[in-house]
Each structure stands twice: as C-alpha cells, then as structure tokens.
Length: 275
Image (cartoon, rainbow, N blue to C red):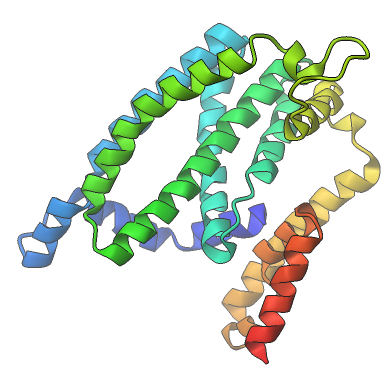
C-alpha cells in the first residue's frame, strides 16, 4: 500500500507541479480569477507547514527528548505518509491510520532504537496528520458537492483547530491524569484499557532493540510487500488495458491489516455490484 501509493504519486509529478502552479495563481482570465477568489492560496499552505512543523518539532524536542533534526525528519516523512493515507481514503473510504503510524515506528525503531518515547511520539505525529488530512478531504468533498467555497471551508477548519485543541487537551488531562489510568497498577485493571494504545506500546517495545527483534518472516514480508506494490503500479502503467483485472494494492494492504469482516463485506459488495 505504501510503495504503490508513493510510486503513483511520483509518477504524477507533472500533475502535482501544475496543481501547485495553479494554486499560486497568476492568470488574468475569468477561470483564474475564480480560482484566486475561492481556492486556498499556496502561500497559506507553505507558511502553515513552516510554522506548524516548527512548533511540532520544538515540542517533540523539548518535551519528548527527540533530537530536533529527527523531529524534522518525522514531519517530512509524515507529509509523505499522509499522501498515502489520503489515497487510501479516496479509493476505499478507509484511512489506514494505524498502518501509517506503524511504518513510522519501524523507521524510528532503526534511527533511535533505544527510545520507546521517540518511537511512540513520532508515530503519533504521523497518525494524527494522516487522520486529519483524510478527514479534511472528506469535508472538502462534501462541501464541493454542496457548492461551498473551499477558502471559507478552510477558514472554518482553521478556527476549529484552536477550540478543538483546548477541548481535547483539557478533556484528556481530566480523564487521564497519569499513565496508570491506561496501564493499570499491579494486577488492577486499568480504568481505560485503550486497546489500540496498548498495541502501539507493544510495537514500540519490540522496536526498542531495532529490526533484529522482528521475526525473519516479518522482515521478508516487508520486502515482498514493498515489491508487490511497485509491481502492481508498473503493470498498470505498462498494460493499461489490463488495469481492470489487476488487484488494488490499497485493497490488498487494507485486507491484511483490517479485521476479517471489513474486507469480506467489501468483497461481497463488489460481487453484488459486478453481478
């Protein structure tokens, strides 16, 4: 899923360049004027990434002891993985937040193998960004269908960031004053088991000693998964007439990480639609 998404994005670099150029404006015709008045300017995106990325990097370094350069690397990798998550959402309406976070955990299991904190926090950056990016795409699509102004949608989302941050942080600290609420004390069960968080914690502990802690079969599966994703994209490029018969890399990836009932329901839906 990751390799196919990134390769597909790379092969569409001309489209990306045109989109960025179009966001900057610069035309005098009516269509260009409408775009300038309704779309989000590219400079908003650039300044937003700069200031928010710098803030995330400083917080990661000051409060979680992640080297600043590694924090900036995490932000760069997060941008790339968010593209993959958005592609998966567009194709299947499912955002693989956990999978993107695990990839970051794998990366920092190699870069900073002795720090479970760095492993979890960098993965949190990726998971939050992937989730927010995909959710924003869904919101913008709904607004597009209703004829809403994209720039005003963006402004509304931006205002909501501040209220949402205050509410989320305050609510979390009220419910979880310390980690024992999530992990429990001794044999006592935790008040909030947080099964997903426990899974992330377990992965961080596995990667504490680097990739050597991973079973050989898992290491081979990573290699073959990356290779298969690339092969599928290249076959779609070289054999366009056979594209409809090729499996979806996103579908295969989601089928391996989701509970059985979800891909099975997708299979039944596809069979019924194709009948």
